[in-house]
Length: 378
Ligand SMILES: *Cc1c(COP(=O)(O)O)cnc(C)c1O
Image (cartoon, rainbow, N blue to C red; front, side, top):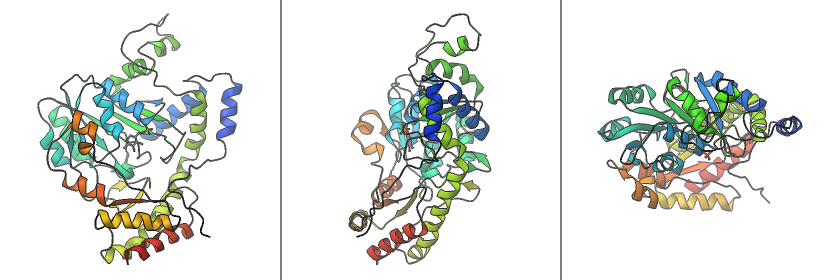
């Protein structure tokens, strides 16, 4: 009997429950207590951002970006179609129109020349997604956004710990969002953070996160009562979640190192399959440091992919695919539009398989997955 090999298995460092207990004993269970402050300081130090603010999800952090961008109906936001729904939905909630562009065939991140062509008079922001933890070409994208006078927003949900030109991902846009969902590298079940690099957004970000009130200024003693001053919502997580997350942050380097070890093992084991033309491995451009969020392979076509996923499942191996391109999803077609051809997006969407990758996977596990893959492709 072969044992089941899941696609994802959440890793606990061992101190999560102790910190949750401490949070409970301090009798501060709502947000912005001692554990939240530790997490904020850690993110500000690691990313070098002006301000980091925990949120209850990556989706919430993206929704905060959209509020802070002050978008109105008819405003356009340029973004890849090959991404998770929240990248677009956050902006649609503000009445803006996502303008979808194609991706680069090597990294599957936004194609900057397609983005440049899609920027028009109504464009207010470009949202980039560091897919699989591999950074987008930030020098070109930064230059594009500056040249056009639009905001650059990073969806770094998958990319905490990745670097571009030696600088942390999440430090390039005026605003960035990351996620601590249980499928990401550093986790708190659900969870996320807004990263504010442009100081001009910091005060409003605190207000938006606290239901549109100036409660943060009140707690700092800057105003003598707090009141409703802007739109906002309850975007902050409880101390219970922050306590759990702090245990993960303390071990972040070990988690990344371990994931990179597994990613490198996959990459080495799949090299000969690539040489034989049976699959394509992920491409990490030089100058980019990735966080081993995901190991995927691209197969010849959709029929083969279906056979491979079914064949792996028969061996007890859980491999998955994504995304339905947003431009061809029902809501994407209703609320957004495609700016040009989506050739690479459509091809990746039909050919990509994500292999199991989680802290604690052994070389034998990797071997088992790649051997099964080899057998199915032979
Ligand atoms: C996971 C993810 C999100 C959403 O994060 P949640 O914490 O699940 O809300 C957004 N964008 C991308 C690219 C993601 O991978």
